[in-house]
Length: 427
Image (tube, rainbow, N blue to C red):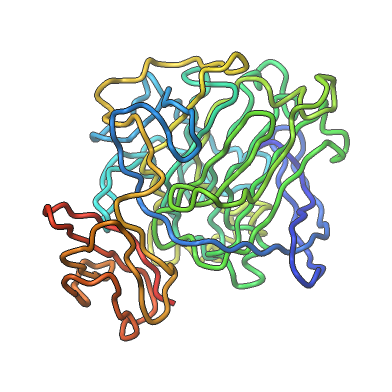
């Protein structure tokens, strides 16, 4: 998200169709970018669900990890004492972004559909200190940083339409002393690129990248990543974005529900620790950043006079919701962690790979099967407004052929009265 001028995107598409991609952004050094070519990628998996919590202290999605830090964004205020630094600036980030980052645009509260308590970053069209829109950006710089492990965030992205640029990413804690790109950067998730806008796939097109090097070097610094056109939209509900960081940096989508998913971006960092090699930059502590940019080179929309092209704000404010962000480690010698001690009141110490029940196929066509050792006593399917659409009793298969295309909640009750809620997409 930060400090780089442009990139070439490489991804894998069955027909090897050459497409044109817009340049990435460059922060703090130069305010310019270039157009380059890329291969336009495709990636397909399934729908997420909220990971349950327990107290055993092991993460079963990738065995051997233990929770070392988390912000569940419970309560009503952001923890700026222990966890976060809120950025306040309107400099455009070196990317010709249009927003002014304000503290007022970062809140903690309920996501209205699920009721989950979340970090909320709000993008607004308003005049403020020379900017024509405002938003929020926050980081764990100097508060929490770590080397190696697993980090994940469950995020409900706004409808980016044309002009919004949400991101979940990390930078090296030594940024202030060595600058960019020497500090290294991991862009775990970004959406809103002009490539997706041009293709009409704004809700499906996302990317993950790594950037490093001794200097900007006229744009010839090392970087690698993948742009993905997903098989289903990512802007109607929560999705889990994960990085597993050890000898490699591997980025995953919806790994909570599908633990065998392949990474959408991977970088090996086990080479020689010499300048220029990725190992020299990515085996050091990194901190976490969330932000919701408006406009900029990444989106292809720049300049205050083009605020009308930000169609995502045409009907009012837009929100990015973060349900939680969690860091896990194995306790091996290459790991480091600096930050607050894990609060015993978080109520989170394990992320399980599966609930009692599993729903498939998902997305669904004309039916779903509910798999478990125990047959459910009742299954209720609701739309995202909470209205009951259909229900069945004592069945493992549900006819969904009459449901309109869209997203739904599936509530499953077992013989003990326990209720699980899963999320389903109907094609």
